[in-house]
Image (cartoon, rainbow, N blue to C red; front, side, top):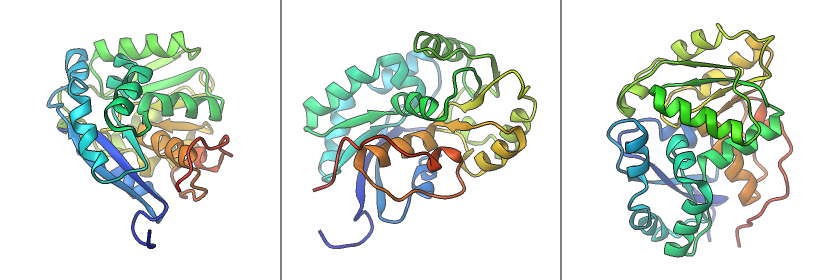
Length: 245
C-alpha cells in the first residue's frame, strides 16, 4: 500500500448516529492513522436506547469491512458495557472476519494503565445509565468515589455541553479523596481539556475517546503517540496483539 492518509492504520469506527464528537478521535490521532466512520442508530439516551444501538451491529460492521479496515472500534461507552464487550466482539468477527474493540474495554485498560482504582466519574448520562456504569465498574474492581454529571437526554445535547463546563465540574472534585478522574462518554467535547485538568488536580484523567485511541494504537502496534491529550499517551503500552501486514 502506498504511503498516505491511513498508511499506519485504517480503523473502522462505529459511532452513535446522534453523536457529534466523532471528530475528536481523529483529531487526536497521529499522522497516518485514519478513522472511517459508520453510524449506529442512537437518537436519545437511556438504557433501552443503548441496547438498541447494537441491535443490527453486523449490518453496520459489514459496511466498514468494505473499506478494508484493520480493526473495528465500537465506540459507545454505555452501550458496550451494557451489551457486553466479549459478545459484541464475537458478533463483529463472525460477520466480517475482522477483530474489534469496544470503548468499555479501552476504558478499563486505561484505568489499569494509569493506576486508577477510586475515580471520580463525570458523565452526561441519565441516572439509570450512571447506576449501571457504577455497578459495572464495581464488579471489575473499580470503586467510584463520587459521581458528578451534566445529564442530557440526547447525544446532540451531550455534544453541546461546553468543554469549560466539564473543566469547571472537574474543579469541584476533592482531589484528596480520589486517585483519578474518568470522563465517560464518547459524545462529549473534552479531549483538549484533559491536560489542564490533570495539571489542576494533580491526578490522571481517562476519557472515553482518549482511552479508545490509546487502546487501538496499542492493539495495532502503532508506536506514534499524540501530545497534549493527557498522561495516558505517555505510558508504555503492553505487547501489541495485531500488526498491519
